[in-house]
Length: 339
Image 1: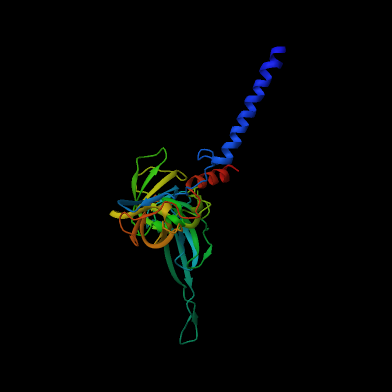
Image 2: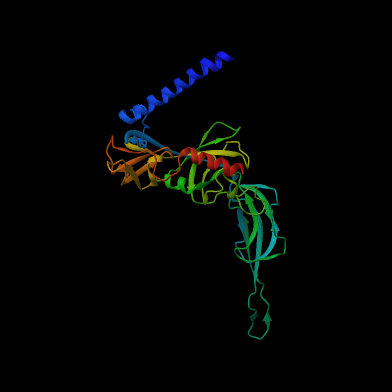
């Protein structure tokens, strides 16, 4: 204990005081060194860029929908009169042109007055008309009785055709991508037959049955995947005869909407707008991005054709300024669906 107080403690104090003195002298006469100077940030944020490049764009629009029966065909009276005979009954399978019922019309005829003044009552003029099936299918309803009065155009029955259509809802983006009017599509049915060609393509027209007794409506097509962004427009095509399908089956419809080979393209993330015209941003020496208008062609949803405003190799910002990054979009979607 005596050695510590007599020798070690005083020597330690002297060493500390000497170190402090040396530091003070160094600061007074030599200043701070480069190593001791705090480094100020001198870098700048570099925005990601992408080059306009030549590629082939295949614009296949794929939408999710369902198989729906063709609309029921009404049977209408073709003569004013009384139903005199029912030829077919509900549930019968009929071909186009098959007789369904007979309508009898009686028109009074003026009596005949003879020279002697006698009056002979003439028989009424009788006309009969056979109402025939306007389409092949199943007679789901024949809503008249023998003796019932009907007028021309009255609906007296309904026929359900044995044909089906694949139908789906379209979003605004999908409609803009359909820059041409295709005539057919490719349909794949979940757990069904191999993908098949589907003709008589219609865009913007409801195709599913909507009357009483129908098994589905156009609103069912596409289910929840595109319901929130649907515009009310639909796409549908005729299922080929002989293809075994059922109402309500999930179907994926692929519509070939054009192909552009060896054209100038950019990622869709770099372009504001995806139809006809758009804007891109180029880096500039001032640091503020330079906006430039471009012409747009077809898109496959990932890249878009640039028809004017840029040349091959031109560098543009990979993301539209102010637009959320793809990761942010994904997180927003997950949060929205999860909530």
